[in-house]
Length: 430
Ligand SMILES: NC(=O)c1ccc[n+]([C@@H]2O[C@H](COP(=O)([O-])OP(=O)(O)OC[C@H]3O[C@@H](n4cnc5c(N)ncnc54)[C@H](O)[C@@H]3O)[C@@H](O)[C@H]2O)c1
Image 1 (cartoon, rainbow, N blue to C red):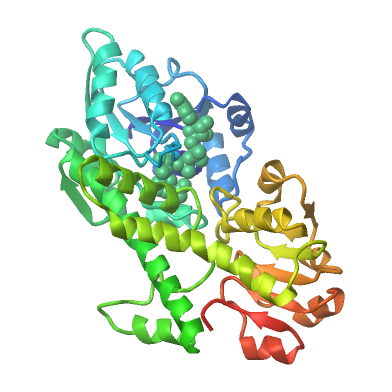
Image 2: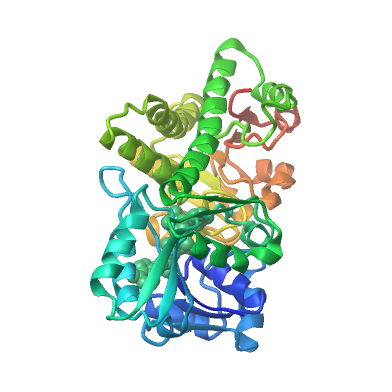
């Protein structure tokens, strides 16, 4: 059993806090957001993540998991401190490290004895040294510490499963003994472990997200070509994915990637590349294609409806992907903004992300159910492929709509079936 502080109780920190507690450790979840901490102390999960609330409650009740805003109340007792704060994009694409800097400083000031500090947030290459230098400056005399980079690969919507069945554990440090101790925290998971130096570990995270984003933009570019030459991307993807050298994952054409990781991490890697004298042409293309996908989607709608001014457009799905309430860099929000700019009114529905979206874009009519959103609509845009949209009653949808136009941003419907129901249908690359 170890005593662990998890700094930052967001999508990553909360799942890790609950998981380490579930494995029998004593965990303190620290956050500077007082409202969030109050909610967590009451056993309420502030985010939508399948299976998380139950795991939080179980461990809070067992006394293994506590939430606090106080570093003083938790860090001195902890052998391990995980930094899980947000590292969003700054205005120029680089990672905004202000939260990491302030977490490292507060953490450093409250160290006692020997502590292993683990960088779990996605941080630019060289951040291990940055955190070390901040802590070194402020730590109390006589205390010692080591820094280990341990990047995270969990997927929102699947996070609880991913934490207990990780594809791999990556550990990077100049202190092999510290790596061993962190590896021991994960030992019961029997995961493949890569132990390396700090910078290489940091790079593994960025390179992993970049290749996944690249596959998505690649397949979306192929989808554009399919539209030009009258081929079907769904079948092309399947035909490609059966090749074991290629594999089927991340080959689904659609409206592009969003979320709190891919866009910002590709931007940050491109920024680091440029700073170190490289010319990251591929990374720039990946981002450009992704942004184009959103614009092309709106243009497609415009081609069908001719003028968007005064039109009522229904949107199904607001989160950046299914099974999460996370709307950071969600394609749906960009599309909605473009529609509003062109004079359309928007009615939207999402099973989990309406509250977050309402805060971001208040001038949308948020509907309590998916069918309410399509009433009198001139077109329906499917943007997030939640399960409940896959087998929706499309006959009912057609009857409720003013004009039966369906744009399928994730290719979840069979074009033939939908057209037979009387819809004008457009997907991506088919
Ligand atoms: N979300 C994912 O799916 C995912 C997956 C892998 C890696 N990551 C990386 O993990 C990191 C965290 O991501 P997230 O999605 O959990 O972010 P998040 O925004 O959901 O959570 C971050 C939390 O940190 C808190 N915080 C900020 N500064 C703090 C401080 N000084 N002290 C204590 N708390 C502080 C915030 O209040 C917030 O609750 C990021 O670097 C991200 O790139 C995220």
